[in-house]
Image 1 (cartoon, rainbow, N blue to C red):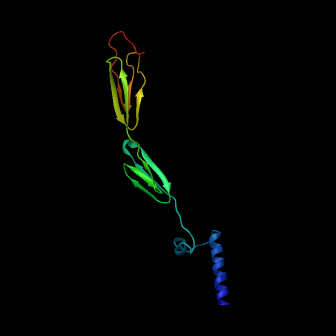
Image 2 (image 1 turned 180 degrees about the vertical axis):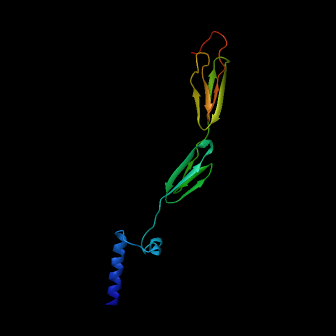
Image 3 (image 1 turned 180 degrees about the horizontal axis):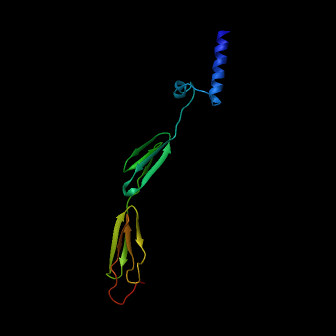
Amino acid sequence: MKRFLFVAMAVLGLQTVACGGPMEAEDALQPQEGSEVTAMAVCTASCPGGTSVSCSGNHCEAVEGQAVMCDGQWKDCPSPTTVSFFCESTNSAVSCTGFNAYTLQPLNSKVCGGVSCNGVDTYCPAFTDARECF
């Protein structure tokens, strides 16, 4: 009879826990026998140029400045990009390399464009004669 009472109390205790009732701190930290415990993790690595990469999975690692790995799959930091713009006024090009790189539209009819990398703009020299951008 004592064994039945113990089993009945254990079942009632598990039902109370399953329904959101009180749980002992020790019980909350211990996985139940026969259960599988998995937890999702999120990893983020800061990358050069002010960017970052992230992933989520059951197992993840971050290598600052390089990459993250989740469940065996690597995700690398972005590589810098090189952009160039041909300057009509000097018959040469301006270029730069950065993580946030793009060409610039004409500034006005005499300054025909340029490049921008990581927030630094470089425009072509302006026409000093009667020519204008086309």
